[in-house]
Image (cartoon, rainbow, N blue to C red; front, side, top):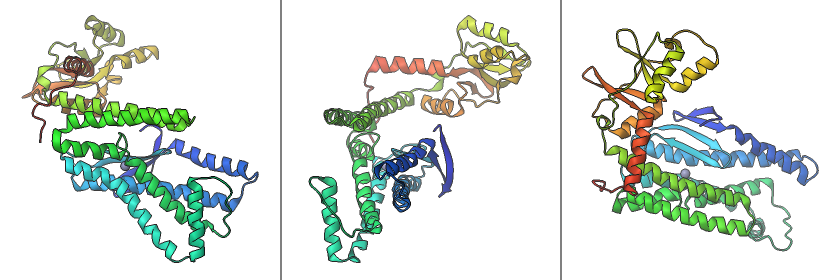
Length: 387
Ligand SMILES: [Zn+2]
């Protein structure tokens, strides 16, 4: 994720924090200084501790997902903390719906456990204080009238806060809508009966429906933050289904069925203008670059060449190309090819069988193909998808 920098490596997973996280602390100091007219050092420290604890809980929630996934052999690329929560980027989805269910449920389960672990604190305080705290909680959720708490200390607030925060994080995440864990849990449960594609479709409809309900409610209450979140949920639900549908379509075809045997080779010694002119003939955007003996040396995008011209660079393509290459076999599935193109950011890959170059597969061909297939089928058939 852009704008996130690594702060730690825990259980061998990089933990990153997004820069916008700093805004929370700006917000704390801002509210503290405007609410009371002065900056109360002690209160500010408690609030800061509270925010740090909240994100520690969010982090543990994400590790709940990541470590459960690891049990099933799925690695986690990184965990990113954003002001709106955390994201654990798993390398892939669990294949088996039951495993997906456990991976998704592990996050909220961690928050429930933390809340339960905080409960014993209330055994060590006086009954009077317990009832004060109880009154305060009621007042917190239903702030009518005046409420004066006498001797609730910062430490009491901390524990009450930990319990309430963790319960809220868990319950919010259990909403049955992508990208919340509840959406994944719901999908996993449906997948046990109908295959992942159909399950994702239903789960995303339910998520979109919830998002619309939430949007209407939040607009009626002029709660624009909630309105923003519901729009986000709506589109995430849509994208989740689209991604699974794409993956499903691509999984049914091999690289050999769409490879481009007719492509324009560029040479290391070609100058930039010649390269652009060559590309124009067939309207290609991505190229393989060869040496004079027709060995592949690297790859290049049209935009890189144009940029080199704009910057008045001179010399051959060898200087600006992306060196080396990853090859595909004609029997590789398009799903794997898509993932590789996406990962190595090359935009084009040679297709090779037994040392012989058969053609190329590039981004544009792949996206055009995907587009055609999606339009032709609408909802793709779920052939052979049942487990
Ligand atoms: Zn989660």
